[in-house]
Image 1 (cartoon, rainbow, N blue to C red):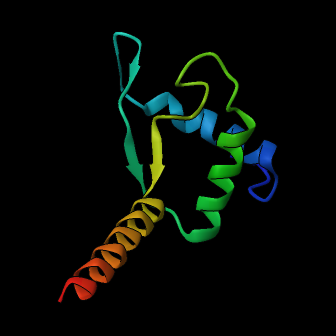
Image 2 (image 1 turned 180 degrees about the horizontal axis):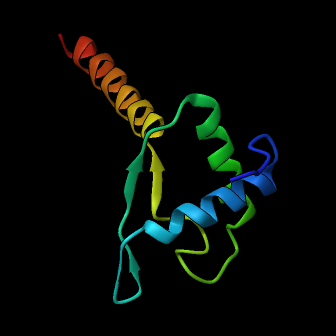
Amino acid sequence: MDENRSAVQGVVSILDHLYEYVPQNDGRVHTLIMWSDGLSCERHVGAKNARANEPTSLDRFEGLEPLIKIILLLQVSFVEHAKAYHKSV
């Protein structure tokens, strides 16, 4: 694809193309994890924000989650758990 990955509209076009491969069942979108670096994750979030008011979950880009986001969420959970553990010891 010849899209500008630095612009929100380019990322939206890329994600529109990728979402052709997201599985759906009875109108429900099944989430897939995709590999991306931190910058790509931020661009993905920007594209999701641009489509946040769309009527369907597929149009809102709810079927793909960048792996880096999941890793960051796990890291935050681990840090919070470790803080709570150390306070109780």
